[in-house]
Length: 163
Image (cartoon, rainbow, N blue to C red; front, side, top):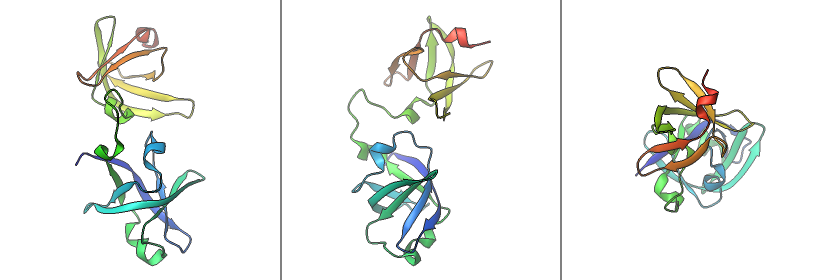
């Protein structure tokens, strides 16, 4: 199994077993839907999502067979995971999390390695570490090609952002 953390269960909501999840996972539409399997905690208990909604800054989920607050209290503070193989990604598709660890190249020059991804609500930013750390926007103006197989990101005009 290739596990990806999709967030942390921070609390319950109501008395019918709904869980409040704090998640920065980028592709929520692929995961938070009825019928999708998630794994909770260090022992990776398998569950199936039956409902999903957004409430304030939280992702709210209900799990199959757990319709009582007393059945889900034990998950408070636990992390939730998915199996990447359950996503059914096509050959050239990737998750933003897959970019972490990739080399960034512009004009045949290595500019660093992606060490994290941030969502600043205006868009995604790649945090690049090298001799100097910096951010680049994850959009078509700067990112021209992502080579998942060779773990390289080819960009354009990135040097203009480095001060």
